[in-house]
Image (cartoon, rainbow, N blue to C red; front, top):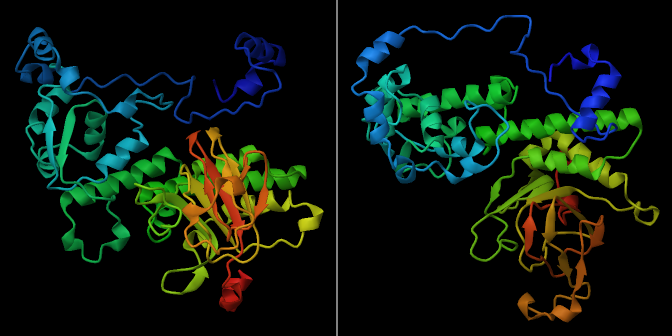
Length: 426
């Protein structure tokens, strides 16, 4: 839809289109401006430079190439996630692809699908040259670049043998430039530009993240922050509450960290959970501080705080919290929170089935093993129905669920009085 549609189309025409699409006339619609499209300007013709040279360089005819491709799609399948819908163009690569390719190293062994690109094109000539590479480092030297790797990987033209990094390269942790390879530098510079362009951010924005954030994590958190800022502005202007859908939007855009420290909640057969804490925290060496994202993404916290403030009943106006725990898509095993003071408020968001909170309100902690506690003594709370106030120091767990589930827990840390005055003020 043209970004000028609201000025070019009369209301009657808009209603006709909405009716044809079976969209209610009062449903809010959101339009994204396509800055690169101008209907008044003729489309630039596609360059034909090098086309004849490419045809002359072909080592096989189209018929020979087609015979060589018989059965190759089964032997070289595209990644499974490529079957999912994608509302961007072919050169706007998927997050899963970035997660894979940014872990590659110069020594990562790879294999290319033979003759994957049709003869007669410039891409065929390039591919025939760099597809001889056996490692990513060799592929770079033979003329392929990170954008080529993403394109080829998404189409099943590359198989990765390994080794790869456990996590993408973090340039902020590099103390000696001599330790980085040409592949490291190429991936880092390209990925920085790609994320900035894709999410309409600046490169400087992406460089200003918290310690431990990957580039893609920083990009998504900036989007969550941007959305939270808009929500707060709209809510203030309209003198209204923050809605459940607005909280869900902020959580969906947020990039959760892999938390290996929450051993007490981590389900069996898992080594980590998607979980972040905002606000005050005592770390494992006893230091009390505000977590880094607290200062970096204040509007995200602002949305969550206002959501709770808007809903606290009169009899609970004295409830206070120092910290907010964000959880994504895991069912916490039975546990007790050992460092909380007073009650906690919790609510779940998302499109899911199951995921109720099992809570033992009469738990006096005399039972040393929580698994021995009787299921009959627990109550089951549906956290999708609204906020729930409970004592996190009593045993609780989360049922298995299907779908997308987020939970937000507001609580007060026991060490608040010991925190530095600066932290208390913030």
